[in-house]
Image (tube, rainbow, N blue to C red; front, side, top):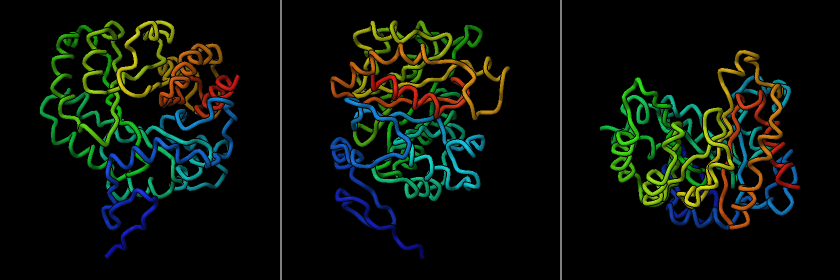
Length: 315
């Protein structure tokens, strides 16, 4: 019989095979900034913004192209996450978009990272794309319960929706009609959720009010056809949850015409990143948590942009 893992922090109330942390205690523990004393290897000094409210990381850690760059040569794939966590305090799990991992896999991620590290995760496309929020209660329940095994490593859970072209016949009204009852299914406590919408015209007060009602963050994305940060933050109600969730995605099709090797920056994004700095600093000044994730497709090599954003925020 597998030995139960040890308790890892003072808020663990039940040790054993489940090692479940009461959600309220877990989040209270996080808000105290447990990771503040943990030094991530190559993190850039953030000056006044080096605090527990800012989390910057990558959209996935599994790229073998990072060997010899972020990861020392010879690092085994199973050790990528451990090495990644030496540099950054959060990561977005991309693989959950394609299916819910086994419990042992999730627990392995948790146990290979230090206290204070947080995993965000994309909900399975079965929920957001295939079933498009209809009759997906069992899938939602399975996903949420599985991710709960991250315990104190659990960050926000993201529902990423596709761009709905006119030919698909899905209108803004259709989307909101399905989103409203779905949001009512989400657990009221113990989890943080975000919703990503890729139809620019749908980013408006109707969506803001619905997400705010359920304390769900609107994911803010840097994408060719979406609004600029200046346009987004002109909306006084843009922060629909208690925290901000930002994704730097870039032009996937465009960059893949140039490269499919993700180990060097090939697009200069400094100007784009600087446009995000004022609203991020404003949020941090208000003691708001900010989660930000960079995709390799943004400029060619996500770790460069993470460090670049930190440098920009330090000025």
